[in-house]
Image (tube, rainbow, N blue to C red; front, side, top):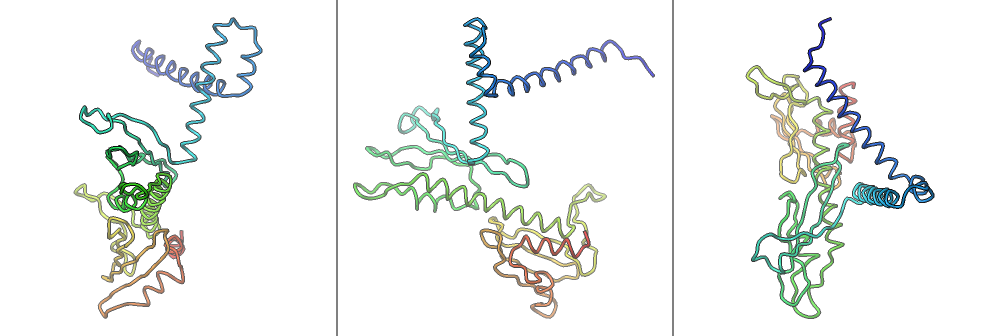
Length: 282
């Protein structure tokens, strides 16, 4: 076995030090976040300066834990920011709304909506900037729940209902994207690399089998389905994943038999995916 050089030994030691530092940070956070630790610090005979430092760090850790728990459970958080533009309205004051989504067991990058108050003599909000996908009708939600002020007695805004409705639409959107991905996986339509380095769909050559499943619109409410024998179909999905309509067309016009074979009485697209898995024998 070749002996390690001095550089290799230094790298190994540095790696061990980084691992120990990471473990120390985790254990420190766990201890500081424990209620029993706070009681021990308060009742201990530690010098006052050190005790105050430990209590301050414990309080900071509790606040961090509470924030993480809130963000994980609530999914909607508001925050204040400032527009760096010197000519921004309302002295650059910005109210931000963070929408956090978990899809397919992963937290996705949060979406943000920023509001300002451009109306003189009114606290009414207006959407200033946002990162919401264009397939979600943000303008329609804002017109419904955050109308422009129309003088006294009109244009009452409801930010809480706007936030809930927006998050519901974002969740539905990602749910539909996940359903399309589940359909592809259930049909065995994963990706593989071709000889030229391009991605090719697996299973196209299988006679009578599904060859392609793709979202046909930006909202992922319509799904295009193609079979290896040339038949094609369209599945229309509702907001929450329910099957609204399925049409398949072959050489002789509409093919109701293939629709019945695909659905089998299923009323939700998730059930269609389960049927595809069963048909493959997985």
